[in-house]
Image 1 (tube, helix red, strand yellow):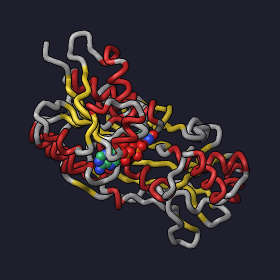
Image 2: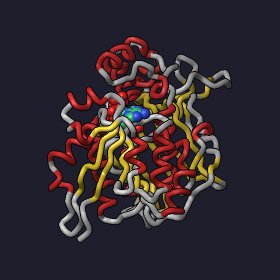
Image 3: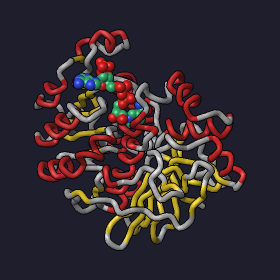
Length: 370
Ligand SMILES: NC(=O)c1ccc[n+]([C@@H]2O[C@H](COP(=O)([O-])OP(=O)(O)OC[C@H]3O[C@@H](n4cnc5c(N)ncnc54)[C@H](OP(=O)(O)O)[C@@H]3O)[C@@H](O)[C@H]2O)c1
């Protein structure tokens, strides 16, 4: 049997510290019956003192992630730093060396997916990113594996816990967007700079990754519409920033919940996609997905509609997906796109037109999802 898989973790924050803890404290649970175990080769952070205080052995720590990437004995790089650079360069360098990569970084996958896929395919290194969509919810794997015999016609879902928490709290407490956002920031559900979440960028990044898996195409993030149309014919504010409590109350009176829905649909000459606040039937499973929960629905032929729901964020839940990807690499399972054909070019999403809209008091025309 081969020696243990040597794993280097870049970043030991909310997610990274849970992954490090699992590898250090319960390595047996990560060992395959007929395969190699997993050992920690190193952990890169910026603030060494904080990581040591958090219980990570000093001997494993470095503030130079590029050294871990360049080390010939590293088998897998687990990128959990987040953001664009240096994460993108480190992932690209690892893949170029033939070192497999696991990442939870939806920003990097959505903005640099085609280039990273090209490098991984050239060198044969595995690139896995299950945790980049839906946190702990397995969805990319099932689309590529158990649903592989289907033609996927649509994917849609609630994929951003922060905005769902805010909309749910506005609906249940009748409080204004700004008040609830401030509370969410105090409770740690929203970042100090919440724009990436509330303007729909994070959900759009996740939709790009979902669409790659479902349709075999990389969509350019910037081409995905993020603002509802207004009755005036203009575009409203991006993401949930224009949703008012009056809109939510009027929608509820008509049997709808307002949810930020990310949706991509197979079209004749491409993929139509949007991330916009939508009027979702209150009694539906999507309409009842509240708080920080996520739900992703996949329409396939012949399967029909299948759904994946659960904790879309949080260190422990997200570590489940990251650790699952590490085990998959130990098993020789390859990249998240599995046996699907190569996609290394970028294309624009087509506009996603709504068949039916709910005209809200603010002037927004929210697409109706039944
Ligand atoms: N949090 C979630 O629930 C969740 C869910 C799904 C996916 N994700 C994704 O998972 C990734 C990590 O998220 P997170 O919430 O764990 O982030 P986080 O708490 O901010 O942790 C980031 C970690 O990366 C380290 N780091 C950042 N830049 C670095 C650099 N240049 N060199 C060395 N270390 C660096 C930080 O070190 P210092 O602390 O020393 O600065 C910290 O340990 C992101 O891509 C995020 O989108 C997160």
